[in-house]
Length: 335
Image 1 (cartoon, rainbow, N blue to C red):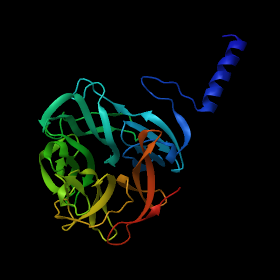
Image 2: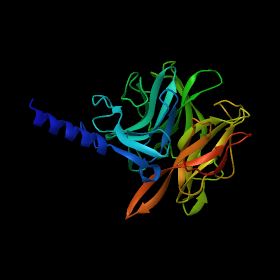
Image 3: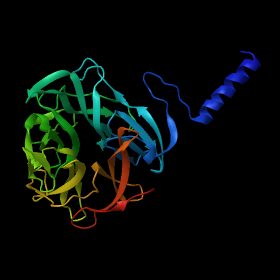
Image 4: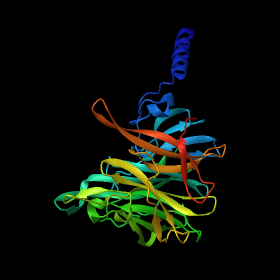
């Protein structure tokens, strides 16, 4: 290679590195750097604070991932999901509400996958597509995540969503998930035990509570006001007094809002007692909790708003207090 050609190659590569530009490869979007959180458009944000890499990894709906060292500036979006197109998911499944969990030296990707080409049910004239909570695995927090276990974690003829992970007092792993209201009429919150390596489920699921158990969710039915029927976005936590709680989201008429329930027994079996009031402002929901490297507890959630005729969702952070007997939201958090 002559000197002039080598010079131009080095110059171009240097400019690429300095600009942060990455070409699209195999569907990979252009990677951007130094993005503020409020500039990211993302539903159902979930953040893993990985102590090994001292990096925050954020995922959610869409199957992509963002990285940050300080929660202030983010890089992304990165493709992290390796889809097996020969499985029930098909070639291009919709991916909802992904979460990252570290467990026994591995990283797990809990998410909802939807294949709209496969119809599993028809309820009141509405077709219900194949939709299921499922688990992928990786050796690294930034993936790639791929299938590693059973074909189904939950019944194939159920429409399930928003699976999250919890290790209960019996030291066994569980998935907590929603059986969708479109199929049941009244959305459920349920648990199912997972295998020790999370490669599948064991036995049948158990009902924890119904959407209609909530005193704060509201909706209209047959011209009357009643409880809303949507269960969405469960996430488990313990307070400093070892009280087990679950944040979850439903609707107050047309406002997406989050509430909390507490387990009377301190285990997933409950019974679950719903708090009377919501814990987030209207149009904020699908939250999860994580602890910063400095020890501060935060909630990641998204807001809804209309922008230039489009309905968009933006991730937000709230500071929370778990030092007492219940979760309290202090207010919005800016890193």
